[in-house]
Amino acid sequence: MSNIETLYKHYLQHRTICTDTRNITQDCLFFALKGEHFDANTFAAQALEKGAAFCIIDNESYKTDQRCLLFDDVLSTLQDLARHHRNQLHIPVIGLTGSNGKTTTKELINAVLAEKYKTFATKGNLNNHIGVPLSILAIDESVEIAVIEMGANHQKEIEFLCGLCRPDHGLITNVGMAHLDGFGGFEGVKKGKAELYAYLKQHAGHTFLNRDNAFLMEMSARAQLDNITYYGTHQSDRVSGKLLTSDPFIEISWTLAGQSYAAKANLTGAYNFENILAAICIGQFFGLVPEQINKGLAGYFPSNNRSQLTKTEHNTVICDFYNANPSSMTAALNNISGLSSAHKVAIIGDMFELGPESLQQHDLIAAKAAASGLDLVIFIGKDFYQYKDKYKGLFFHTPQQTREFLLENPVKNSLVLLKGSRGMALEQLMPLL
Image (cartoon, rainbow, N blue to C red; front, top):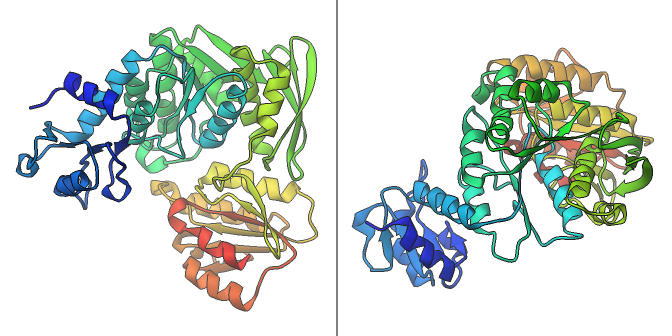
């Protein structure tokens, strides 16, 4: 049986990690992970043929080559290797979680810090028990600051991920009605996210905290945090700010040590104001001057279908269809209601992982959407469809049915909100908008 120390020596010679034989690169380390419907042990020989330097496997039947390194469990080995690598890193690591805005805030923080430092930030949404180890192992010796995003859909997950990435600085963007099924309700969400605060308290870490968020203030007080830098709209905050406009892009004024500055971001949605303030707060904490901070903010252009304003041939579309929950859906509907446009349309899809509260939450969102004063609201999905006789709007079971309607009844010259859970795959509607 192989050991982590030996594997780490191989890793230092072969820094690229692959978990999919379709993406094998020359001289990589291939980790043969198992899933509900696959066992990558069966692809070990293929990975070697495609150029992998070593394969990490946990089924002795597939050890057909000395380059196949046998461990008890491949996933645990990947996590142990990441933990070992993190122990060799002597750089600030910022751990970030929250119900909404994690990825956007992570990208904003990275854009700001990159004006002064060589940074690493989680790619995409590699924020789970597999993604976080992969992110840690992607940090090389040139990196000066890392920003690691951590996602969770049940309690104890953030605690586990903190044990992997060992953040010495941390931020919770917010807590909301997300993954209610796995967390066991909203109080479970708060408890799960607060595991980051507990880790920072236990390890004398530093917390960046939005003083305007009552839930976060309650959670931080319960954790008895010692090292806090506040941001928000209060003059007493280290960084305070004011939203000037979000129609369509955000402009703010922010204050540090009595001096005020103006900043712009290529983001839509007033809900991103606090995410921008968080990035400013962290930037100043790590010694960036206001000019560097503002340059970083202005230089960030979203490309991940989160708060992304896209002009098509016929419409302007708010692409926010990467994910959805009642909190983010409410914010998105509030946002489009406040934007200037002669014609406004919302196309919203079902919200997943809400457990026993799903029907009630879909009812509430349907009511809000129908009363938002929009020219047209299109609801998609089996949960929204149950309210087709209760609220004004068009209701479809599937995106395919919606496609057929839009082909016959195209939306033109409108501001369109397109939002739903990832599993709804609403991006397939973009060619028709």
